[in-house]
Length: 242
Ligand code: NAD
Image 1 (cartoon, rainbow, N blue to C red):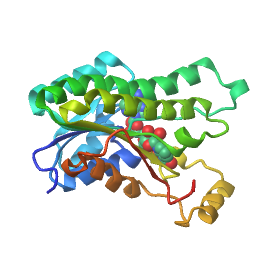
Image 2 (image 1 turned 90 degrees about the horizontal axis):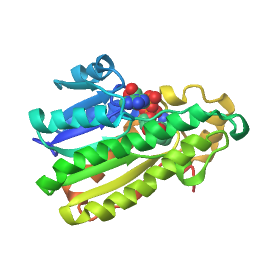
Image 3 (image 1 turned 90 degrees about the vertical axis):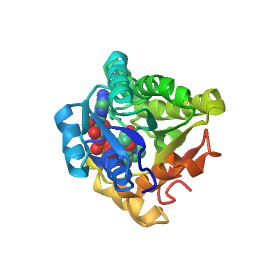
């Protein structure tokens, strides 16, 4: 029970990687707060892991994100761990990318993390303890054609991670990023078959990832033992980008 009595907030917890992360922390005794776009979606994961705490919130809305985190800190407990996992794609070639597709992806993936960090860190600073983990992507490190908005948001998260690590380190708050490769979730189910074959051939692991491949990396960075690891980006991609 590595996370017993710790309050852990997971955004984007309704499915995919976020759901697996929520399951992982719950299995280790944490009080997991599930956040997703709707409360009903968040509730599905919360019910499955035996948590009472489900919130619907658009993380890109700073007032909404702040309201959720204030309620968590006041009524459930000061969060020890914040996992910023909520994310979307709106892919398209640069020439044809619409303003709203650029803006929305940056708003959810990057500003959403900022909103939650700003709010949670107020409570973590008072407690003089915190673990913040941002789910970036290998696309944020290497780019991808057709994903200018997504790549910029995920690279932005890495800059945000380093800035937060520097700013909050003296209060025993760490901030790290995890950069998954290609993980089998709803987000990637429309990948063309030849791309899947490419991953299977070229990743030393010989397969796409599963949500459960990401969770242990997040849980290590969230643990008290990871106190001396901060500002880092841990790639979890089966070696694909080597
Ligand atoms: P998914 O689409 O299955 O799940 C996304 C989750 O984010 C859902 O719970 C959804 O409710 C939530 N969400 C979306 N917009 C939101 C908003 N505005 N406010 C609150 N919650 C919101 O995606 P996934 O594949 O599980 O991806 C999870 C994270 O991992 C994302 O940040 C994604 O960019 C990142 N990632 C995924 C892959 C992959 O291959 N699947 C690779 C690298 C990084």
